[in-house]
Length: 488
Image (cartoon, rainbow, N blue to C red; front, side, top):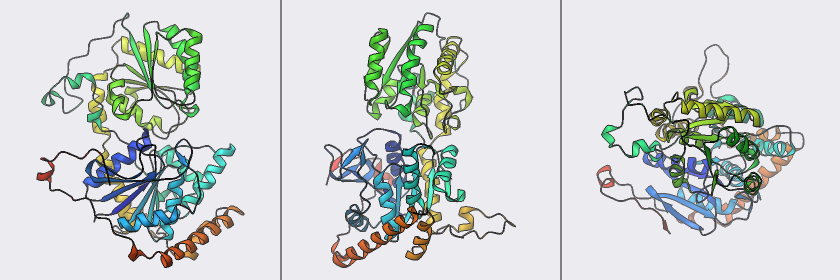
């Protein structure tokens, strides 16, 4: 059965990143599977109102005040009127929020439950438990997820983190990883071959690549936002030592952020401008062109729930050096990666080992693309997400969705099928803390009163229903060029 789905997050194109790419690719594949999908995000510079992307994907750019890193100012209630208007116009069945730090996401889940809609939340990040910022974030996440129907995490480490932070039932959290469009991240060796020459299986025989000689230059690529949590300080400390111990080595660094000035100062102090090329911010469609210029991809992140960029790098035929943090060890098999502790000394040693492995031809990077193509697929991600929708809507039984273990003595439905009754919702929020629980209940009551007011003074009959994007038959699709971008 097709569903009308609203993806809600502060993070979407034209800003580039893993969350933005995940939302776009997942939405596109769900549309291919017959569902209607819209995206609700805030207005970006030069992008306001309603936009259409390829395949009829509609984006609502809502004008809201942005405070930090493309996150809107949290107002709790002011988003409700326009959100209700969009949901009624598009006849939405399911609201799917993305990212813990997205104000739009948290508010949309609250308003959707007040309107009697099913909700799903996808967590893309890891957070701690000790510092003040993490404590506040975790309490807000607890507020957001106390009444959500189901949660999705991109790795098992991310699931464990989210379950602990939000005190969730583990059976209400599914693990669905990110993926890549492998065809968009082909190594140069694939670009020069005809499609019928590309091997079907990584076990197919293929001539060994030309080994890298001791005097050949090895290029190390880094593509990342230049923030503290992405390990930029670690990268700044390690680059001079890596270049000193491996003379025939150079770096290409793409990305922008507040740590860019520290990186430039390090290059000036050590006079490494001829060894390190800084490209600044690059668009997502340009990432492959940057990656294929290198041999090794270096990912020094301090925290990461999944790390889509390392899958893209492996697909481009790069050997990956990354820190053993978060969900990164779950992403790629060991023969594609060299792991390091998030420490300067260990990162330098791991990078030097990777360089030595490439020079001795011990690593067959020419096989990586075909292996990644078999491991990760957005179609598989969409199918698994669709099953979550079926579970919360009730198209599959609770025992089939959550699992049933004979003799365990628990009801498969239990409290996992969330009731929309206000008293039941207040019970769930009241357990969030001595003071926080009462504050959360007050927010829910106010939200309900606002909803009643809107229903009375702005009835649904006065809201025009938007026409769905016309679907073409497969024969018509093959002869029609896709629409790139338009306004309405």
